[in-house]
Image: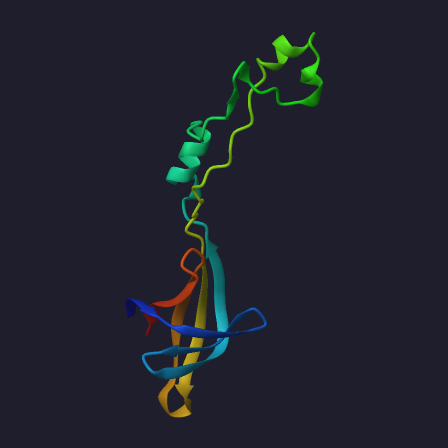
Length: 138
């Protein structure tokens, strides 16, 4: 049987993988890491990416005589008409791109010899910077 959770947990790591976690006031010791995977999320569907690819970034500043030339050679009087036709650099957007990336670990863990072990799915959400217990497999 599988039980789904979204409970926050505190995780101690060793060798870049979960070693212990605290859930509902109990300390669980990881006996074995059974699987590890990364969920990238849909970063390409986010509002920030859509605005960047659609050209909705802030407009470039213009000089009184038109757009500023983007290169130093454009200051030449002979090349100035061509320089004004060059695309202007896009100002950086203040929107951040949150791709919803999460790292998952399926671990076998237990609270002690008397209680046996179970299988738990631990998740680290990079956008929140927090761990959670997502699933308990019996």
